[in-house]
Length: 257
Ligand code: IPD
Ligand code: CA
Image 1 (tube, protein in one colour):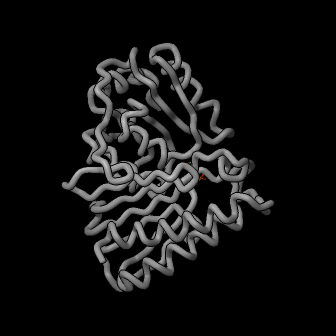
Image 2 (cartoon, helix red, strand yellow):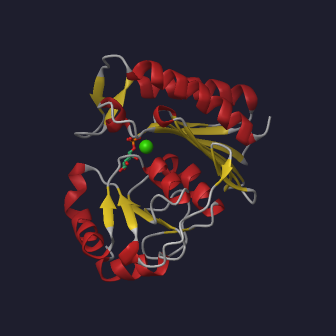
């Protein structure tokens, strides 16, 4: 089974589980800080994914949002898993949530899956082989200027202060700004040409690993917000259709924190 096939198999099982939980009253807990939610569904979906990935690739390490690092005997292979990205959306019955799974070898992301079960959408990519949505080739949008762009961001409510200048700047220059609540899905939407750009500070590897590969493989560009190279551990991300990338960097240039 290729890494992409293993990730699809695990995401399908987790998606089915999330959909089953979605109709039920859930116990919702806050993690370390207010409005940082976790539900029984996040934990169950991660267990389901880890069991399947372990069975397919027994030696690979696994980094999961809920379980943290689980070392494997291989020092070169790692799965990066967000079992439920968009937990707040999920908890409120807002359908923009997804499962995100990436496979990394020698620190390079080779395969990525973002699956939105409530929307029945699969976004897949393999390095060098392009990206797809439900089997059809994905391409970023052709929008050429920030002024015509629909852009998206995300931030925790406690970080409104530091994000507000970026939000205000984008709002006054772009055609529209959205805050959809699932970074992995926001990235998939850039790849699909629905958003022309997405930026966020303070994300984790599990939020971005699969989505960033899908954007690149759909012809987009991914850097940090200041235009410097992006890795899954970077403190910020700017993902665009490539055409508006410089424009977005310039828009934020004097705000760099
Ligand atoms: C969150 C979402 C959200 C982003 C937050 C993430 P979670 O992930 O991706 O869009 O703004 O920074 O933590 O908690 O729903 O898995
Ligand atoms: Ca997440």
